[in-house]
Length: 342
Image 1 (tube, rainbow, N blue to C red):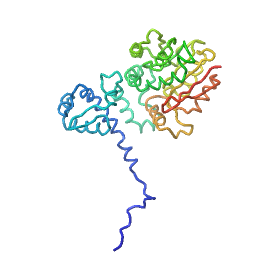
Image 2: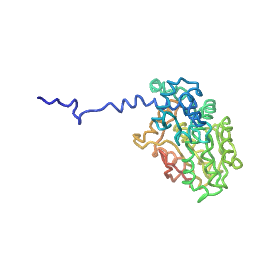
Image 3: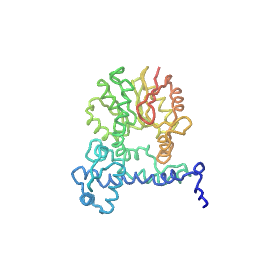
Image 4: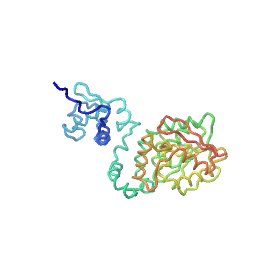
């Protein structure tokens, strides 16, 4: 009997599986968003564990809800036992709408999903569907998004405060939090340095959200507010010990960012520092994945935004007058960049 040859030489076979996984990579995001929008996690949190109860509370079909709940169980966002559904520690903390750590606000928005749907044409034209850096769009878009970013950035912000020596080697700092959003970066400085005073700068329509979080963290008495566009607002001269740029540069583009660095250099006292937190690819722009993906996000949502390498940041900061540029690990996808004014 003649042996049947193998279908493929194992050394030559190239599996298409990675491409198939990428093709369906949209599905987990849509499944999670559907669970959040149907308040599945909140319904379970108040004691509804039976499929029929959850479906009724969500105003959904039992067939569709069963498939959704099982998929969320497969993602380990729910647990299933004897046909009953329960929260996991992750979903209980971050996906129950009533939780102070609720992360779902950004998942309730469909703007990003619709924008990404036009990616092919955006790449052809080089023009975005919208400009989230414009005041009208920013005040609408970020007033929701920063609620999720506040939770997501809280631990990196705490580690940033620690890396900057807030309350330890540096006390009583005068701090400028540029395009502050929820204020989380300045809040963590204020919590670590009880003598610090924070000037929160952003578009005026975002300050209601900022004040909400500042009051929640009990540091409102040490916050001042500077309304305006970061491209044109007057930061003053020799006023601050520290300027924070928490995930801001990527939306500004190179020229605006270089100008911003120069204006912040003037606003800092001698020995003052600028702290840049952002998505930073390696110098070859081959890794890590998230900063590379986020560059595409900037193509879709901004006119000139991008992600920038450490070498680019170093050059721009040096040209602005920051003679010493260092980095610190804050347990994130990218390091904290610190420039010091001599």
